[in-house]
Image 1 (cartoon, helix red, strand yellow):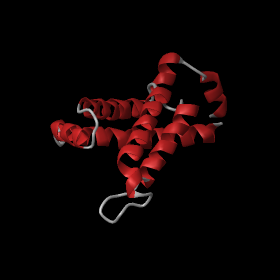
Image 2: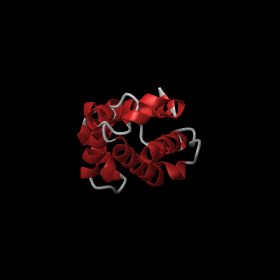
Image 3: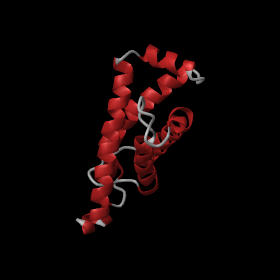
Image 4: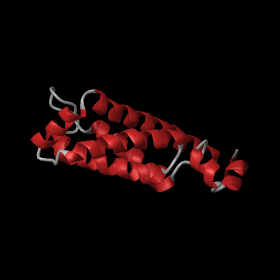
Length: 140
C-alpha cells in the first residue's frame, strides 16, 4: 500500500507542477494572446481563461493534495480537448515543426490514474478530512 501511495504522490506532485507552470505561463505571457489563439482555432475566447485558471489553481491544488480526483478529471478533459483539437492532426510524434501529442497522452494517463485512485500521502485533504488515516498509518 505504501509503495502505491508513494507512486501516486510522485505523479500528483509532477502533474501539479507541470499544470501550474502551464497556467502561470498563460497569464504571464498575456492571457489575451491565448484568448486570440483560442478564437483563431475555433474555440470561444473565454475558454482560454477557464483553461488557464484550471491549470493554475488545479496545479496548486494537486501540489497541496486538495480535490485530487476532481482536479485530475478536469486535467484529463483538458488533455482530451488539446489532443483532439490541436495535436491529433500533427501525429503522435509531431511533424518537425510542432510537437505531437505524446506528452498530452502521458499527462492524460497520469490524470486518469489520479482521478481513479486519488493520492492521500502528504495531502492537505488527508489532514483536513482524515480520510483513510488508519490505512495510511498501517502502510507506513
